[in-house]
Image (spheres, rainbow, N blue to C red):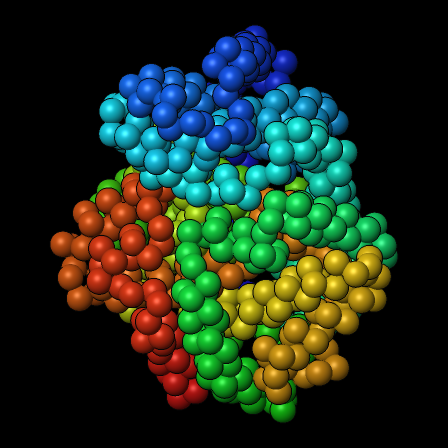
Length: 605
């Protein structure tokens, strides 16, 4: 096995604050409190709360001044709040044993409840302005530039409870949904398993064990699968309790707020309509036979009739190379440069400035993400780099998120509130750039097969597995209305959802019934149905890449303008800039056809 040993980096956040006890951190924390107090005083003075404003008594000029003031203050608070939250998270996500950071997060979240309560008062008040809101927006300078955000707030305010109920819900979230989420994060990040690898028995954190699914040796993958299932079995009860707590809370609040169902708020947050979602889901379901062709072709390569779960991520072709982080960096920079010098230069700054935490270690959470630091207009990228080609694609993906943040760096926090559907646009584009360049530069058919395999693994996860997660979450929400579910119930629902999507492409004896335990998205009160936006992002990004291939460099400036504007329009309206109709089955099918051609190529290799 070819090795390129070098240690993946840890991120540096000292340019934000020196440490959690520093005078700079404390000053911003106190400033957040002071500005929150001042905001509440303003709300009290002007009687800003959920109510209906009499249009005959409303003065649009005065309302415009009030809205301008509120927009300015909320943007300032969001900048402080977002920076402090991300800074504390930089410690919590990478070291769950850090009790100082855990305590800082708890204190911060308690203070954050007040901002949430202020927001609900503002949102309720804006929703009660009726037709006067449009008049006021046309008068104020800040209101004009924040028109989309203000109108969206007014539209969503109809799904608010009374002011007292919203305040109580915000306070109870600390000891309810947030506490359940913390429990899941702590349990999964501190789970270690004794595992023999390369003749040595060692304690492996959950991310490292999960990443063995890409190991070239089937016996190792099989043992890792068995060890993983046993590990999740050992903690299934606290995680089932956490999931019941989260989903029960969401169901109760959705009912009290007048939501149609659990999916309703997720669709609104995604800034799409049900027609768009249903059109995409129908296209995804129609593509399952194509993915099953891929699964069966892979099984044949392994000398099997169907794939076991531990084979889904098995490498193919010239897959024995393990990349050091320095080489991964070089690959990403070279291939980003093939798209745009600006993208390459940005990524180089991220590498040089210590924006990336890629090292796997005990106490570090599973997965990958990118978070913004609004005060300094920077991002930080989190992943668990294991030297695989897939890790390089993940690195490119998360740097895409960071580039998205960079394109919108001059926007205010209210203007940058991007839905999850569009938040995947730049990440998918960057991942596609690396994949396409890697395929073009493949030195042999075996290397091409390895690259193709890595891409199809990712594509099948985002289309087939994401759909199974959607089905899982949908049924969990529906059944949780009637009663709590046992850990066995969650496992049964998960296996049935996998059977429906993977079909005969996956050996029915070896699915993954514990997938619900370690995916953090299920455990976020405000992120129900976090799954389908990934599929949207893949297919939308694939469609955009096809336009780029047609238009070349002329596409780039329009694309960057789109990234800067993803917080200021619906997905349907923003897609229309590129003559894309998201309610048309043809668009989704065309994107899926790109993946189908990869499957066709795979079958010939």
